[in-house]
Length: 262
Image (cartoon, rainbow, N blue to C red; front, side, top):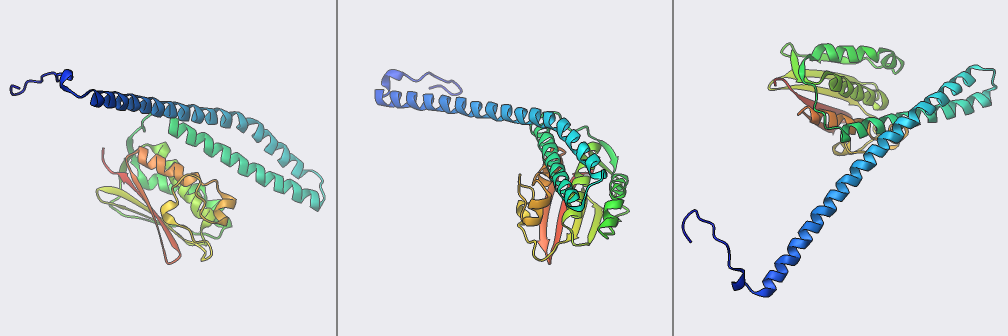
């Protein structure tokens, strides 16, 4: 055989059993590839079906909630009021689940890339926190926002960033025992840390917080779908960022890293 020259192998010199074995292996490989493609196609069709169903369910459910709110304003006795409140709370929970499924399906199906732009991080975080002022006040929570002077702009999709910040604020509102601090620093990355206290009897595995449908404890199972932080992780990774969570001394610290430059 000459150098840099590929020659055909003389099949006649190969044992027939080896040829048969190679043929069987090749067929199995092709069948496995076809099977894997079928699984991917079925998975995509399922997600598209969930997306369609979620969209179709939202409209009638919104109407049901509207009628329940009207019923609650009518002249009801205390027992009837209690029943309406229960149904209304369950309906709100179902609506949130449907909305999360809808958003999740869009994220997993869509191949659209983030619309990257220079975004003022301090402004976005401050506005998001102010949007939840009333909810924080009801819970007697005073968010402590610390933004380093070095923090300026990040290279992100603004709508995705707002969704991420809102999800993390909602998470803190639901499960915090009253303490919440948001710290923003900058180096090669924009580093945003959400740190809040948790109740001693609400322990969970922080490494699983971003898994789909993970609720961790009874409180999370009652108030959440287990999709909010999973969606947060998807959004962060779509923008090339990272997210971590750790638990220490009854304090949960969720840290996200975002690209500072393009």
